[in-house]
Amino acid sequence: MKKELLFELQKTLQAKHVTFVCSGNICRSPMAEGLLKYALQQAPEPLRSVKVISCGLNADEGSPAHDNAIFAMKEKHIDISAHRSRNVSDSIVENSLAIFAMRSEYLERLRRRYPAGMPADACLMRELLPPPENGGIFDPYDGDLDEYVRCRDYMAEAIPVIVAFLSFKIISVLLHQDEVAGAYKEFARVTGMMRQWR
Image (cartoon, helix red, strand yellow):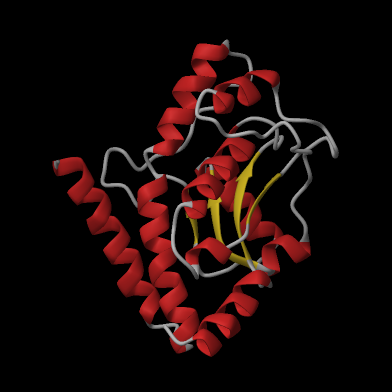
C-alpha cells in the first residue's frame, strides 16, 4: 500500500473506534477491549491503527476494572489496571466503526436509545462465530477468578474473527463502498467456521 494512502487511511481510522459494550464497564467489556488491543498490536498497518474502547450502559463513571478482571488479563500479559469505566454516549456511538455488545438486550437498548446514530455494524461479540457458538457473553461479576478466566477465554475465541471482520471493514473505508459490508461480514463468519473445523 502506498505511504500516502496508508497515511490517509490511518487518519480516517484514528477518528473512529471499535466499541465493546456491557453493563457496568468493569468486567467483560474492559477485558474484551484489552484482548482486541493486544491482537491488533501484533497486526500490520493499517489494522494496528484501529482504536479500541469500551463503555457501559449503566456504568459508575471512573470506576476501575474489577480486580478479578485485572488478574485474569494479567495471566495473558495484558494490563487493564489503568481502565476507568464510562457510560455510552452520543459521540461514542456516532464515532464507532463497529459496536460489539455482550448480550442481545444491550444491543436492543442501544438501538432504542440511538436510533439514528448506530453504526450498521453493531452485533454481539460472538455473533460472527458459527451457531451455536454465537450467543451472548455471561457476566462473571459475582463469580470467583476462575469464572473471570472462563469469561476471558470465551471472549478470546471471537477475537480472530473480529480481526478478520475489521480487515474487510478497512477495505470498505478505503473503497468508500458500503456494499462491501456484506462481503466482509460473510468472510468473517466463514473464517470463524473454518476455525471451528480445525
